[in-house]
Image 1 (tube, one colour):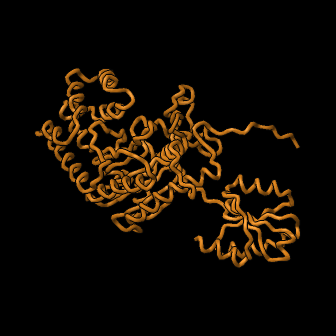
Image 2 (cartoon, rainbow, N blue to C red):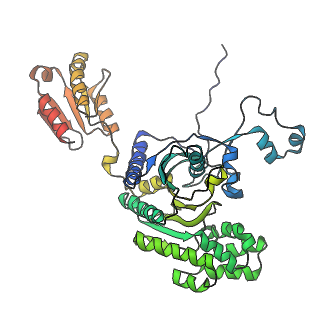
Image 3 (cartoon, rainbow, N blue to C red):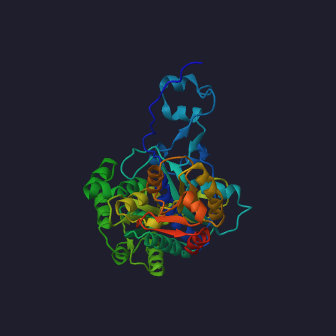
Length: 451
């Protein structure tokens, strides 16, 4: 047998392992989000990690398509590649010949595919939430990962603006529960369309939108240069910049007085903001969201106590299901950026101590006989839904106590020969250092009454 080559353990760039305490904190975030979703009537679904590339491509814009992780076909993946493509090194054409599938980029496009395939089994309006990892071939940096979780809630099959109102409230309710100070930025793609009409550049709407979406990163002069390089005239650029400095809907109404699509977008926003009634909701005309499929209200959430970037987003879309051969059903959805939320909460020390759920009580012992005596007691506590451990090995008491401290276990029950004979168990509170004796009945009552 050949010797196995030793490899230094490592992870792909942009991915992470999570320690138990980190998973507990993440589950705390997931738990709050799931609870709020379910309060508003959303049901959980799951879809595969892999989707056909035909499902994914063309839904995220040109830049988004570049960030899709493609999965090579099984076996000899070059067998269907033609010689001309290989010799010309045409990577785009070659990819279509050697890869049929990709890792999901988000949870919204798979949802559209899911709805079309299962439309006869679903109740509409269909309110679903989905919490799962997604993958993007992006450049890793602080708060940006190649593998990360999304928490999405979507409503399919309803045009009512009440959906936008409730999704805005969900954002507000979740971030309030997490004790995060946020700004819910809101805009409407119809307003972006109106900007293009106002600046006489309707044929360059997506190019303009992508540029505006970078405003936070490159500033107004950066937008000026980017649009200039993309073939916009000085007059068009000045018109765009004139709109980008508008601060409220009243000013915008005056500018768009003769642009119906803009007035419609303003009316929708005013309705949502009035009913949502949250001081954290702020109109932002520069919010552009570069995804092609948004058609109405769009959101982006910013933390006011961190420079992490967006920690939530979403919008209204109109024709995704139609792309997959289904009837056109309007949809609207939001997504929470859990990875960034976690990093901000860790930075600001916002996780409550009880979020780190761990063993409640550890039984330690001096001998195998002591351990065997403790075993049925441990089982009774577990049957009473008390998270309990019994130290498995024969070890010095110091080592067993270190184990309890390392895991943050609040109570330790010491079992020795005296405890076996008297029936009085030594119970130590690891946080205060105090110790008292209890019978097992008293111990059981103590832990069950705490619940």
